[in-house]
Image (tube, rainbow, N blue to C red; front, side):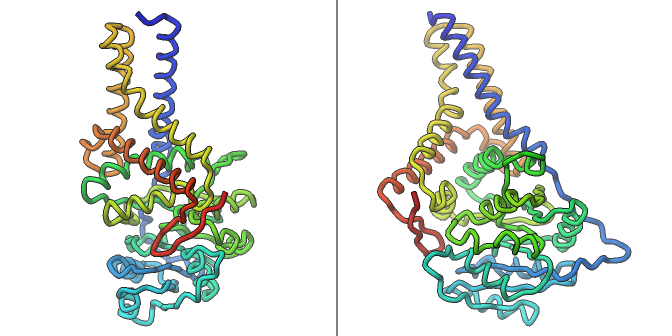
Length: 380
């Protein structure tokens, strides 16, 4: 028999696991959902919205993205695509959209810049609208998206307004991993708390974020975060530190994106997001410990109780199984992944553990971080 004190510690640990994992569900429930705004009787002009798209080898995705922007019911748009030395048909895709889309060639990448930030900075300097909208090359927008987000930003007096589009998941690995990744994002950045006084949470979703040009310039824009691979979060933190207002909403009816095309691209993309270029072995080991301790170890309580014949542990372990697997099934359904993938969440966690372990190993060996055919040295 296990001593009572140890049983109580196990029960306390189970309670902490439930609180920690349950926080993702609470945060998801609290995130504002933005619906397409009805067409007004008298359209309001908010001034020119300068849309900047950084593109590097985006031939397969860029066309639908541009078509969605050209179909917007907010007419006062200028659209700029900054090509970062593409070797596919990206430039031809832009040329085929006529004079409403302007193509810029990215100047040579300076040594201390990340490619996407350099492209965005290049695009901003070629535009003049009072609003800046940064859209990833693989985001397809509904015709009301720009107007809806503009009206929302004005209504909320937001300096930066960003949305989470619907994440399309195709194939086994995307449906397995991405629901868990979205939970990690919710726990890391707590988007519902960003606008509360005294909170330190801050994030922008680089897939679609709108900002007032005055706020962008006051915070230094992409030039201020030039070497950061996770530039959207870094910029949002500068907005927060400057006392500017950030708003985030989930908007699956305003846009959609398929983040990664295959398992390899997903691994490299999420690996880039683990630490960017700022490497910390201590932080990554802490992340590994939290993944194993909060997601995998609790599943051993039921087998342990059965092996020891302890009814209390069996009861707590069984309750954990129902609660944790039920939570992941519900979350998978909430983000439009098949519910059955929620039952495979330990596999998703193990995949993510491998991702973090790879990041730790590369950092300890001073490997570079690679993305879109470019390599960046680690710092720290």
